[in-house]
Length: 237
Ligand SMILES: C[S@@+](CC[C@H](N)C(=O)[O-])C[C@H]1O[C@@H](n2cnc3c(N)ncnc32)[C@H](O)[C@@H]1O
Image 1: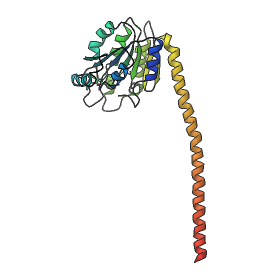
Image 2 (image 1 turned 90 degrees about the vertical axis):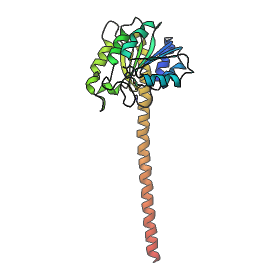
Image 3 (image 1 turned 30 degrees about the vertical axis):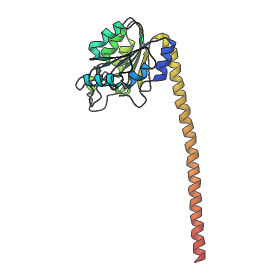
Image 4 (image 1 turned 120 degrees about the vertical axis):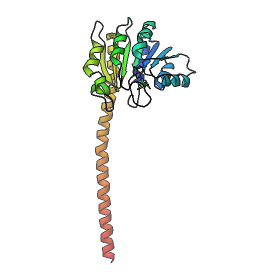
């Protein structure tokens, strides 16, 4: 599961509007909260979940959202048929992996490479977001079995090799891989975010020395005051 924050929504919507993307495709439904968000912005939402119980519960929870199609199954078995049926490009949120608890995949933890290969062999060029980038940048934490997870080099190769290489970066704990035509938009968005973070850091650095010296001045005043009180009470004795 992603760090607090979930999908990079602003960037997904910027791509959705710039390239008139009508579809949102997710692997790993879990509670369906990302699919429910997508339903407010895309005319077609498809979400795939390998755990029958989680899939049923999410479909029930969001039954009023008719534009969401809940598909029960292992993404490796059902994604190809779904991708073939899409009428055009989709924003894709790849988020299916074992996450403990009631989630599917203990002993079969990560179908990511298969999913990416399926998407990249489709005729349409999709905008691929992969959640939990940190789990691929270095080994996932125990009790995950790191042998079942692709390495960073394997993930990048899966996204960039072949005849239509995608442009890839990591932002907000997600890999973002887009066709070359969308590179400028994504890079500008990422640079804005980096600039905001940098400015905030600089502000915090500037503010904390000020707080530090105020605290020092106050404690010097307190020391001085207690010395005077002590002297005054000593004089009064
Ligand atoms: C991290 S959660 C998904 C969170 C959700 N996408 C969200 O944004 O809130 C991962 C989900 O993937 C499911 N899953 C694991 N392996 C899968 C597979 N091979 N195919 C489909 N779903 C899978 C798990 O059951 C779990 O519900």
